[in-house]
Image 1 (tube, rainbow, N blue to C red):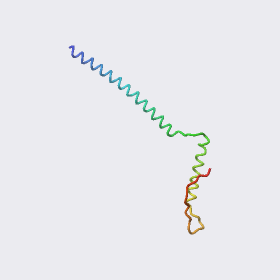
Image 2 (cartoon, helix red, strand yellow):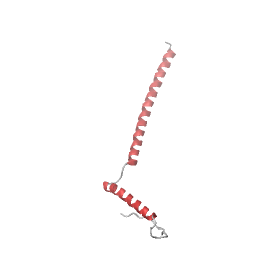
Image 3 (spheres, rainbow, N blue to C red):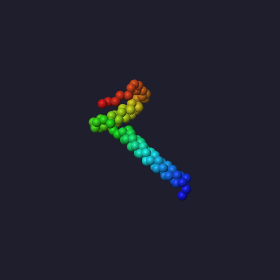
Image 4 (cartoon, rainbow, N blue to C red):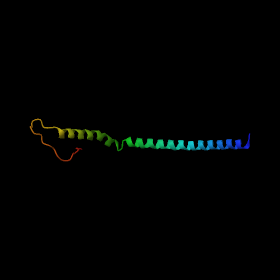
Length: 92
C-alpha cells in the first residue's frame, strides 16, 4: 500500500473514533435530558400537601359545585328570580 493510502485510512479511523466519542456524549446528554423531563413531569402531577389536605380537596370542590349550582338555580315559587351578586364563598 502506498503511504498516502495508509494516512487516509488512519485519518478515517481517527475520524470514526472521534464521531463515536461525540455520539456517546450526545447519548449521555440526551439520557440526562429525558431523566430531567421525566422528573419535572412527575413533580408537575405529584400531589402536594399532607394527607389531610388531600382528603379535604374533594370535599371543598363538591361544596364549590353545590354552591355554584345553588346560586344559578331559580326559586320555584317565584315568578321573578333574584340575581345573586357578589363574591363566591367556599364554606369550610
